[in-house]
Length: 271
Length: 299
Image 1 (cartoon, chains in turn cyan, blue):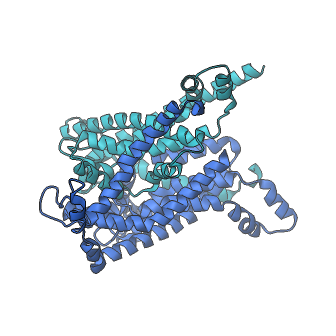
Image 2 (cartoon, rainbow over the protein chains, first blue to last red; image 1 turned 180 degrees about the vertical axis):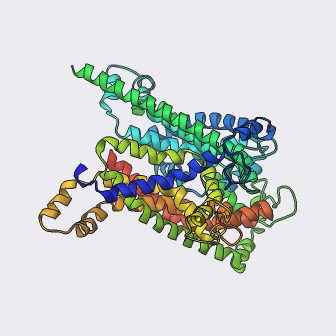
Image 3 (cartoon, rainbow over the protein chains, first blue to last red; image 1 turned 120 degrees about the vertical axis):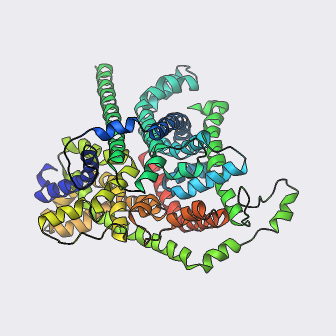
């Protein structure tokens, strides 16, 4: 393949990555701008970060958002992993078609529809809107992403390991926790992280399902963005970008290490 | 695995199934029901359709298709639907035109750096969608960075008018959805056997023709998957047309939002949602069918 990597391909890659990264870089750079004007560079300053620390509303919203994301990602990971196991391991059960439909549809369902329909459900069953309704909504839409990520790992999984364990008399639930789960763990962790960031990021579904006292960070950012671009928002965004980047880098390092360990274990087993 | 133990098996299936049935399927039925009810000025602002089984028949006679008739009578709604479909279709086409060379170049890059390139494509989509859309406001607005840069270069002498136009919406959708187009394209291009192209070249086929006759047909699954993956959510997009499109850009996601939060007309908002869902049912079913087939093939 190396042979055909031409100048055209190099240009396509350069332009593609420039397009993907320049807008984000500009937000980061202008968060350190001393001037309030977006196009005027007034020198380096961290004053917008300092002013964030005094912004009670924003900090409260950030705390609510992180709690919702943590809780919903954790429950969604459990449910999503179960759904993935059900879809890959049980080829035939009543209502399987509907189940797989339900498990994939939220991936492409427009957020406005999901938000509206969940809100109407909460109103119909008389649930007070707030922290818990947003959490339930987030579990529902992130569950499917976890299921897809875990499923892609389960289909490439060597089932003879499970069969060997069960032939040796290991009960199915124990086989799952001792054999299956450790092997699919990287995918489960990746699924959790995806669910966490999706929940952290969501504006539309949260806006529909929230109630008093549960304003999330995206909702705060959205309402101030509507008033215009400000250095404070740039600073909040930079912090979020930094956090997510660190998380993704740590995750990829963990995954890399687990791959290396697995290869070493396989070499030992083979040798 | 748990086949021998019906109890464990039942538990594994029932838990996520029940959750999705209660919080995903049931809400749609409620939306449908409310779209048939009459708006009131109460809290919640609709007439509850029934409280007990005995009331169902009585209430069923109160169901009304007025909300749907209202959608059909007001040009705002059908032009919103039409404009959403048009904007999503054009964006999908633009994404293919931009994403294909990008994915192609990635698949042709040295094997050793491909995982890193893949990671670089995915990384922006891990950062907030809202932030990525917001970033373009600072670039596109008349006193923004793009105009300032082009004026400094001497290309233009008047600030550009991109912000609050459809062009801005296209830019926003292409930017935000690019990874979702590139990843399926890359996945199918990466599997392509290079010896096929070599064989074609040996037989005297010019590269452009080999590309058209071999590469494109073999990457068709990626093209279709990527197109659905961006087209369906783009039709119902709210954040991008709201922040970048201004008041001139009609999109149904925005119309639904305004109906719900602005006018507080829940029945009409529900009817808007039901019609939008009907428009998207076909692409969603096709997409799911492909997804399921792909999983079966990977087995």
